[in-house]
Image 1 (cartoon, rainbow, N blue to C red):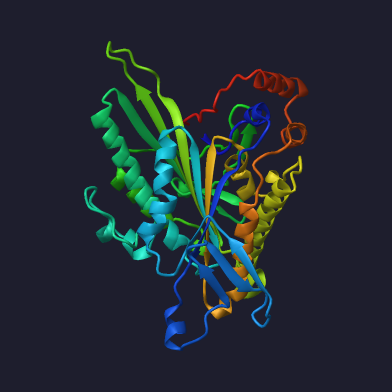
Image 2 (cartoon, rainbow, N blue to C red; image 1 turned 45 degrees about the vertical axis):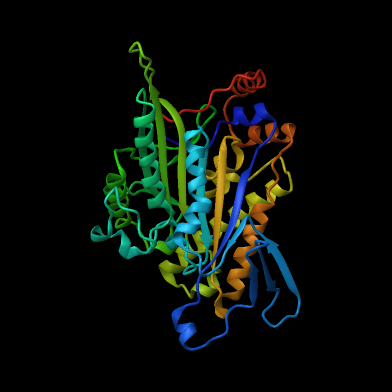
Length: 406
């Protein structure tokens, strides 16, 4: 069982949803053929000091608009710089017991997968790295975070010998609104999302692997990527990593393993409009599912911005999986919006930047009464069970949901 959101009782208890959210903008370098042909770049500019972008509402228009982000990474920014700003601070967060999610968003070719995983050639065996070697720059956030995670565990072994940690992971893709288990791909089973008051939303029957070190985790990820049902741009790929902790006293008494936190990484499908893909037949069907999931994600952010009591998380697999990142006040969410500076990508780049700006404007509080009413509609258990959970929550009894290994 993989938990992806906090329980509804937690949300009612606090009377708010702390959307701890940062939105970053990363601008890809100009495509080589564009530079060789000296084609004009997109009509938007950026100010790294102000972390803002300025763009024309239309390429031929004189009207300009400005948007601000948590940070703007220019085309010459390195993988290390992006990780140091986005991923490294979250390493401390997970060991403090707070869940984290990093998500990359943008059109096909804007650099989402490069940002999250790195260049595809660096994922082959001869480019996998010895644990004591510094990762080369092409590596993205995921391999850097995993190596940092196990390095941190080794530090704990040296400084706190009575504290143990273990890491478990699950790897899925959402393709045509079906959830595939990338670590048990032979079953071709469409995994189901379930929901309970104790655990929130979870993935039923997903494979959970014990990951001992960086090499083992990286090998498992590389092998799983070969089993994806489609090209990288046509499905959402999601990696879950759960950290557990156990402490022993000096007299030899041991505690049971205690769930500490979850780190989740989303490498989303390409966000471009259907008309731009030129898709037909199966590709057209894929594009429709992707477009729908992004449309529903936009609806969720709009509902949160409008402070509506009801938020349509159930309308797509992606939004339902993201419910915890957006509603649980023990969760930190970072979104990296990837855009292309090429002139031909102007419309898609502006659309992506506007999405990031809307997401960044998500309020941090939701009215308690409205939220409770939303949960009544969103979760269908018996009224007695729901009222009992609400009363327990209001009484201030906090029990962070613990994922159960299957």
